Length: 170
Image 1: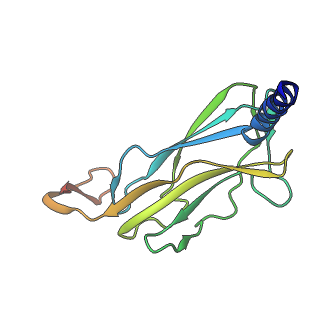
Image 2: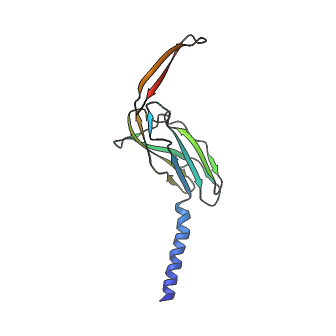
Image 3: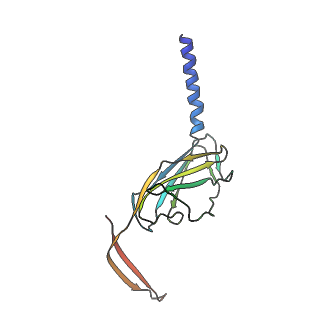
């Protein structure tokens, strides 16, 4: 009986040892610094990619898939598509056990200027395994602001004008 239990424990430990690294080769983190943004304000997120594969990995496009991207949905679940679809990320090599981070402004890439709540998550396509790795979903809201002070001034060199505003947001 004890011999049988020992075999089961060994089998279970082997499955955990070998299955764990296979399922968590790349860890993707997404940080949104705050919840509320004003329409057309830059929504800058930080993406962290940690290599847990035990070897250096090359993240590159493959199988018709871009190696890096975002999935954004609106408050009613509608998919928010990319504004620029021709942008491609250069390949990235991540050393074993290392983490790389990058700040990305979502505003010029996606139509996130309308008022409402948005859900965003980052994904990494690892071509060597033909597999996607996802970050947790983060939420942010785009709202309006009320002008409480405004001043228009002339620009001496350009001959035009510039308007400065102080906005209030709840």
